[in-house]
Length: 469
Ligand SMILES: *[C@@H]1O[C@H](CO)[C@@H](O)[C@H](O)[C@H]1NC(C)=O
Image (cartoon, rainbow, N blue to C red; front, side, top):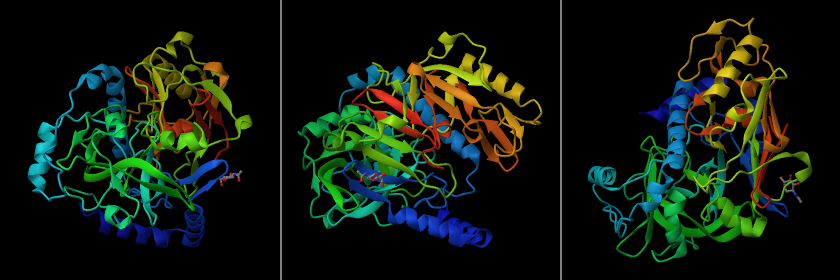
C-alpha cells in the first residue's frame, strides 16, 4: 500500500547505482521541451511507463507478470467491445447517479458500493501499465498534468478537485476547476453530453444541477466518474479554448501516479478529433523503449515521404478503434508455414497500450516454431505467464532472427531483437507475442522505436523505422 516510501527508497538506490548526471541531463532536456504548437501541429514528449525520465514512472521493480496481467485485462476488454457492441448501444441511460450532486461529499464506502452495484459500467481497457505518458496543459492560467496516452479510448479525463468521492495519489497537484478562469461545466442537453455513450460505451447521467456526468471504465475495476467539462487546453504557449474532457470526482485503479488519460480514438470527443479541425486529421507517435530516451506524439501534419502505408480498415464492430490487415510474416526471410488467409482470419487493431501482440492461434504457433528453430542454439526457459516461447538470456545478448510483419499494401515492420523478445526478468527473455481467438492486436513492444502515423484524412496507417530510441 505504501507506494511513496517504496518509490523514495528505490529512487535513492537508483541515485547511488547509476550515472545520475547523465540521466538527469537527458531528463531535463525532455521536460523543458515537453510541449509546443507550431505550424505543423502539436508536439508532445512521450515517456515509456517505466522510463526513469517519466514524470510518473511505475515502480522500476514492478514484476513483468503484473504488466502481463494488466495486458490480459486490456485485451479481454477490447475483444469484448468488438463482440458486444450491439448490446452496448441498446443499453438504456440511467436517469441519475447516486453520487454526484452539488459537490456534496458523501460517505465514501456507501458511494463506492452503490456505484459498484447499481451503475452498469462497461469495463474498459485496463489503463496505466502499458500506456505511455505525457503532460497536458489545462486551465487558465495553464498547469500541466501527467497523463497516459491511449489510442484505444476516446474521452480525455483527469482527477479533479474536490475529488468528491475519491482520487488516487498522483504526481503534482490535482486540477482545481475553481482556480481556472476558463473552466465551465457542460449541461446535460449538449451534443457533447449526447456523444458520451459512443465515446465511453457507458450511458451519461445528469446531476441535480443539470451537469452532464460521464462514466469511463477500464476493466480491472478501474474507472473515472465525474462532470463533463470544458476548458482551455494548452501546448507550451499555444492553446485551444473549449476543449471537452472529464473532471473526475471518483477515480479508481489508474495504475501509476498519472492525473488522468488522453483519448486518441476515432470519436468526436477524443483529443485528436477535437484538435483535428484546426490541425488536420492525422497524428503520429514514436514509442520509445524503457530507457531514458523520449519519444513523441504529434497531432497535425507529418512528413508523408518517410512512411510506408497500409489502408486503415473499417469495421462495423467498433468505429472508434484503428483496424489494419496483417497480410504476412516471415522469420529470417522465410514466410511462416501458414496459409496466407490465416493472417486476416480475425479483426486486427493497432493499439498503443497493449504490450504483447496477439495473433490468430495458427499464425502464432507457426511464428513460435520458426523463432525457436532459428534460435536452436539458445537454451530454453520455462513458460512465463501467457508467454510460452522463452529463452535463458536477454534480447540484447542472444542472436535473434529478423521478424517481418507485413500489412495489406506492403507496409512492413522489420522487427529488431527488442521488438521480437521481451526480457521478463534479468535472465529470461520471451517471444513478445501470444495467441488469441478473439481480436488480433498489434501491440506496443512491436511498435517501439518506429514512427507510426494514423492518417484518418487519407484512411491509412504508416510505419517508418528509426523514429526514436
Ligand atoms: C514543429 O516542431 C516539431 C517538433 O519539435 C519539429 O520537428 C518541426 O520541424 C516543427 N515544424 C515547423 C514547421 O517548424
